[in-house]
Length: 185
Image (tube, rainbow, N blue to C red; front, side):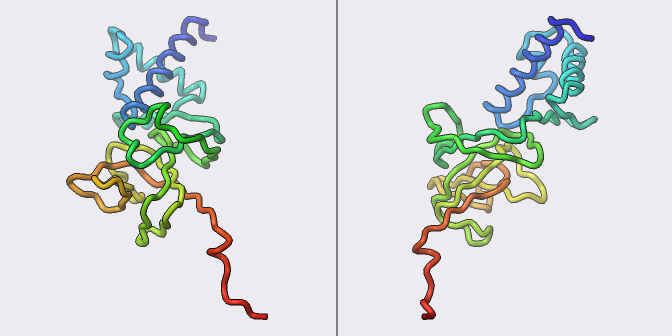
């Protein structure tokens, strides 16, 4: 059984990891955790990460750098923001929170934006709410979304655009006028 101090230190490490992911949109390396917490040895960080993994609070992939995944409760709330506010998400920029339940864990922080433009090649319509896992690098075999300089969302990378992350799901609300068809009375 671990001491109360050991548990507190592990929680301090978990808070640092969450804050780092929120700020940088990717998990920290062991060295970044070490430097961020002012710890003299990476072995101490490895031990804390091992404890967090044993406690079911994180998951790591052996042999891969930046492979820490925070294991959140399956149901949580994610911030809804404007696409142009994706670079830095602050409390002031959050429009509201949306309940979101995910069947799996994702390495980046989750957020949602409203599609300000349709993206037909991805089946995205105007005003769809896009749930995104923030990422600093494109993910293979995933639908990566980019923010254009005009603050539109695209599935095509560009030199001047910014990667938002991976599309996890979308929420679509139908208006009654969209559902009306020809009457067959």
